[in-house]
Figure 1 (cartoon, rainbow, N blue to C red):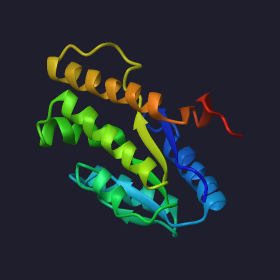
Figure 2: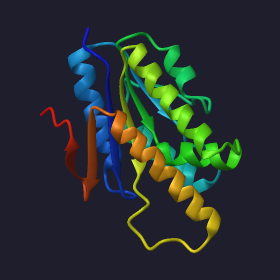
Figure 3: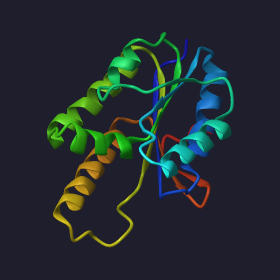
Amino acid sequence: MAAAMIAFVSGGARSGKSGVAEALVGEWQSARGGARYYLATARPGDDEMAARIARHRRERGDGWLTLEPPLAFGEALAAMPPGSTVLLDCLTLWASRVMFEADLSEAEGRAMLSAGLDEARRRDLALVVVSNDLNEELAPRDALVWRYLAFLQALHRDLAAASDRVIEVVAGRAIDWKGDDS
């Protein structure tokens, strides 16, 4: 069985990062075998989000076991068979749940992410994590938005450091920043 792998795929909104991440999951699963899981962090809170979720499901196609993990997504990873390939989409929404629903501190959220990544390695999973890069615009003036952005960027730094591969997607094109194995 192949060793555990973690990849971080980031990019702007609607940059094509989910498609790049899904293709990477397909490559890894083909090489490793095992089941293919989709950990969905989005919740259909309004019509637009429900339509986006439905579109992503259609575009992904069949062959995925979809789970809506608890906030501590490491718990979902702990239940997966070793050798599985997993797509967590997306860290941006997960971070908002950590901060605004669970009202956890930055340290608690970062520890939860670290525990999930550790669990993926323990279970010999191939994990691809998608997140939006929201740091490309002007700095926000709202203190709460600024705090969220700082939290998300801390998660991105932690994830990039722990990942075997880091990919940025710009206009549908994947740019490898770390661990290009192609």
